[in-house]
Image (cartoon, rainbow, N blue to C red; front, side, top):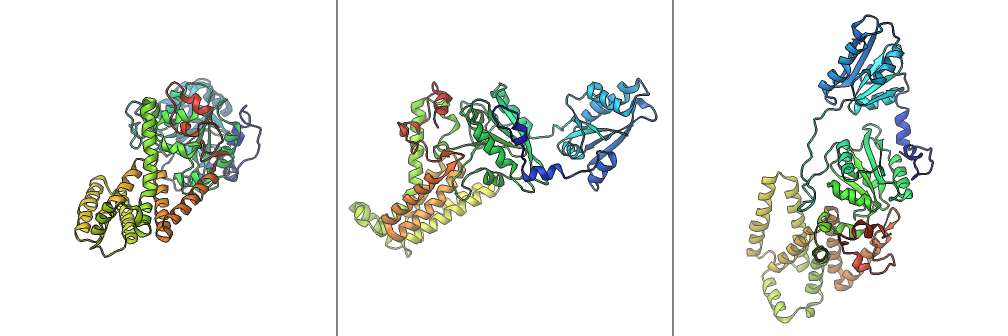
Length: 503
């Protein structure tokens, strides 16, 4: 990928390549012939090769190769095989080299034709849905793009709901995803650079950025890290995230995930770099800040006052989800004098018949809440809904009636869980749940002092994270004016200019 970008104005000249890319170029050093292709795809039932007589004349043979299932059979027949047996009938004495040149010049009807000189390039094209045309006596081939259209159609987003905005989402096909972004940014300044990742899978990955808007150093860094990604296959987002972020040991997310093309387009307008992976129906954007995970795609569609009020509500929900169980445990165990008298009497009355301590109650409820959430996530929808209802109503009500846990502990844990569901990012929600458990343990150990110490360590950890040169806790830590105001979404009039002006 660095070599591809070396000639662009936004990139300095770089001639090195990653270990994974180098291994891939040297994988098939043999000459590009029909026998070499058969040797590479031996025991591959989907590999197809058909010999054709050019112009239906003896002595002029070509071979068409493809992988069944990755190509459209009608396109292969109409755009490749039919022209070879009809349009090339003239001039029966032409050489194989001349036939290859004529195929490149338009004798074959495919809209895309690429000349391939190495076996490695030919194998890569075949595995990505292309059809190869080889001529006897010429160690070269012509590649035609005839990918099958059998893919999931563009549908509405399932995680990021849209009310006023667009209602299309990314799919598992890379070229469809790049087209969705290109439709929103119809400018040649949108650069899309593709490369392959994975020694075995050769997964296509695309880097998207706006020339003149994105920082050239940022694109260079991301390209270098992608080229250095040396894995067998890129089948999930985990290895990609670990290779791109600066603090892989932190549970807090450091890449923006989105399934909406309009949101990715807005990120690109802000100077970020987008990443699309073939086979994943989501896009990544970098660099990020913690405050970016507190915003939703509909913020710019709403009035600024409404969007600002909802953003403040999300920050309050973040604080409640993170601190409420720990504060309850600290007050109940060490600081009962802080509870109003009537509330304290109510708590004592509820706790009188419960055999377990407040610490065990809260820890047990937190673990039970996580178990219910995991069960609801991994089970089919009807069964998952049933498990949630049984766990929340039947088991919870039975536990209170049996006096195993107190009602106030259930209320505290449930309210913290509901507040966590208001967070727009699921990755951030998972990190908050882990931090919430650590704060509860600190409250059990030392009360408010433990909560304060754990909270200071958490803030210190966040302040030490850098996302590709951008401070993770900005705008609160960048030294600029009005940091709290910049936590709120900009108005529709300010748009992306207000965001682009920020560091």
